Length: 204
Ligand code: SF4
Image (cartoon, rainbow, N blue to C red):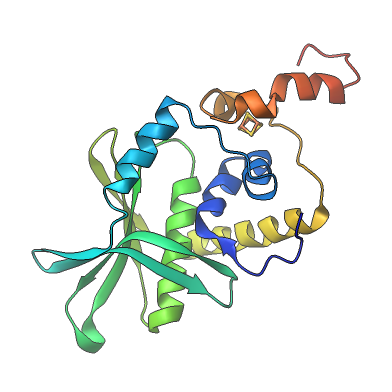
């Protein structure tokens, strides 16, 4: 394991916010379980992961844009960056494409906000919000990058680096709602691990 990580991939913030153990398994251990929903999500992403520019009304969409922040030490691709206007008045917003429907968790918002903060650092312009397109419901959801979301995003980044430096895999989640939708469940074995961690005294 390399604990001298320079820049954290933006997509890993999403995993971290969903579950710290999932983040660890994917980022530190390099685990990836390609089940049917994951494969479908990968194919949907391929449709927006070809670089190029598309004009739609006042908004011009730049596909697959590499962004990074030296301050936050995060980097990665934004699926789409939309631009309206030009020159000093131009407005920017990142748009992320997600498999499935909008979930109950804020992990997608954190990833999007980090993209927005990267864009701000790169362009010197305020990025006040972005949008997430959910393939499952064919809906775009607007996300405002307010102070609370920005603070939460920065805390998530700090937590990620702290976890990497700790060299210690986080315990599985006690509440299983997220585990039911997690593609890494067969690798993580949350029930069995919790049972072992409890000394075999609980039914997990
Ligand atoms: S199965 Fe549960 S505890 Fe394990 S990585 Fe997935 S969400 Fe986290």
